[in-house]
Length: 329
Ligand code: HEM
Ligand SMILES: *[C@@H]1O[C@H](CO)[C@@H](O)[C@H](O)[C@H]1NC(C)=O
Ligand SMILES: *[C@@H]1O[C@H](CO)[C@@H](O)[C@H](O)[C@H]1NC(C)=O
Ligand SMILES: *[C@@H]1O[C@H](CO)[C@@H](O)[C@H](O)[C@H]1NC(C)=O
Ligand SMILES: CC(=O)N[C@H]1CO[C@H](CO)[C@@H](O)[C@@H]1O
Image 1 (tube, rainbow, N blue to C red):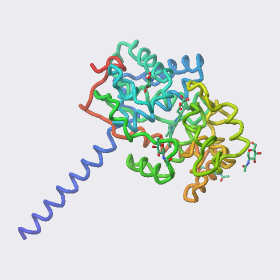
Image 2 (image 1 turned 135 degrees about the vertical axis):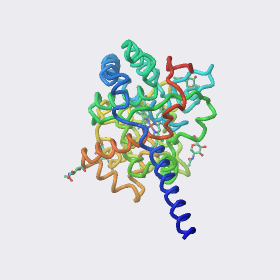
Image 3 (image 1 turned 180 degrees about the vertical axis):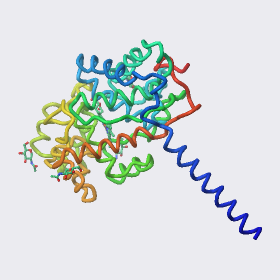
């Protein structure tokens, strides 16, 4: 009798703890988080981002990539935007194309939000980056979606935290899956998110091994489309100016669409990590699906970027709301 009661107590306690854990991990971000705090946050961010986008297209890829790097390093907590005397996340060599326009987009959107007295210092930089990312994707012709909100800003940003946290352009499928699954992202999520390379630029150094000295003997990576490889050699000669960056989607570089996946089918994935999604038999079917069905890609992308936006978030009393997105309070 006593034993049964104890068992019942123990098991209901366990159920309770489990419930707490699952809500803590998930339910704290909410689409209507700012409903009473700053009801116009979405339109304030959207108009600042739209202005910036019309000044320069780079706003779109720069903001999207900034969001990815923010989330994969210490969680989506705005820490990628912090300055730290040349020792911040953004000062790691992997930041090369974290184009200034991404940072500027968040800073301008923050100023727009804070111009509303009700909103002043109430909306986190991490949430502003998540909203701005949704807005640039839509502006570039991609899908629109509701953004979960309620992230708090982190207080730590160091070069060291970037180490081994971002994928390398020479990664294999297994390496990509290992890194993405450590953040709860599936292979399909990873493939859909790689579709972000449908816009934006890369510096020549990130793929020059594929067009000049691909090991062991070849001079051109055999998985590269030969005529594309020769075009790449023209744009990226051996002693190229390291500042030169080229379009990652050679076909529709300024449109967020599924042409990235059609390019992979033709051997026009710029990085090894792109092309391997098609050459590896385990991921090829998903690439073919996204290449042939834009709405299947859009749907998968929305699922995946929503999950990306939950990675390691700080909520409740954790972290702070940065008054200035480049500095801790
Ligand atoms: C799957 C593994 C990934 C690898 C290995 C990778 C690697 C890279 C590299 C090497 C560049 C070029 C940087 C440069 O030389 O300037 C780049 C650019 C970019 N990446 Fe990725 N990336 C990956 C996933 C993602 C994801 C998940 C996103 C966003 C959801 C993303 C968004 C972008 C964007 C938008 C650019 C262009 C940035 C610009 O033009 O300013 N990437 N990526
Ligand atoms: C990938 O690149 C890194 C440095 O960029 C290098 O250390 C590593 O050996 C490369 N891996 C492969 C499989 O080529
Ligand atoms: C390589 O690119 C050319 C030109 O865009 C295209 O016509 C051809 O089908 C591609 N080759 C392969 C093997 O996909
Ligand atoms: C494309 O994908 C969408 C969304 O997954 C699906 O509803 C639709 O049936 C697919 N279209 C075709 C032609 O397969
Ligand atoms: C935009 C930005 O912060 N770029 C920095 C990236 O890191 C290099 C050093 O690795 C700095 O020189 C850049 O200023």
